[in-house]
Length: 357
Image 1 (spheres, rainbow, N blue to C red):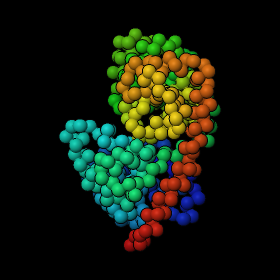
Image 2 (image 1 turned 45 degrees about the horizontal axis):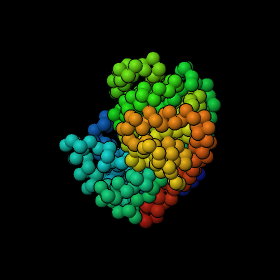
Image 3 (image 1 turned 180 degrees about the horizontal axis):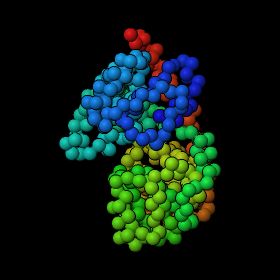
Image 4 (image 1 turned 135 degrees about the vertical axis):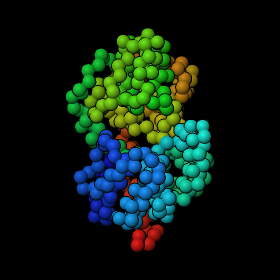
């Protein structure tokens, strides 16, 4: 969202832009100074969010509203459906739990999401999931990959890293939570026998449990947990390989960011973004590993396949070839491309309506 806004300077002449933030939490990213920001204190509660959104919309009277993530999407659609654009960030039929809460969320999405004026899906797989499992008309869905600020990534990568780790090393980045399946990666790393260090950049509720997994696998002295990094790109530039181990992904930003820095990459073939990023052309599958044009894909949750992929990427010639191809492929996801497509959808909705009274 912040990347989208940073690259929307030209649109200021056409639109007055407001940003509503539902919760009073520390910001990991900052929008441009010229954006009118209203930050509320909804504390994660849906009823407070709906009330705050209603007050916000009555105040600014927007012609179009664009929301990100489920709670914001719900309040957006319920507040003014004909003017709402919702952005769906993941394969929700897979991501939502199978318990009563997950079933309730699925039911609510099936009722609310089809009422939105437009739905922006971050990948083709997410779009297909919205149609097949949530009843959204394909004609109302626009597939727009996350806009990536490649120049900003390159600038940050050139800075000195404030983290020192043993080299050579393999890097993975993400919040330490179940869906990222870092446990599988640690077990695969241990099974691979690679001499390189494994660096896990990020923080989250499973850190202690993952440290115990590394200990039980006998690799605790070779697995480094850095915690959250404000600038992961400076460390990323020093890595030999980037690995993503998620069970599900909508559009994995970190994967494209690593490619932009020039790293060869391995990713689980999680629904639905990784294969669209790495395999937009022909691919070759050998012993469960998919050697795609721009990286290696492995089945989600498969320790053996991930271990094999880690060993395969020790081949210097293969690794260098993938690094070159990855950097070229990352350019397809530049911020200007995504930004323009977002604004095309916004204009389409705005032009179909009478101005907000």
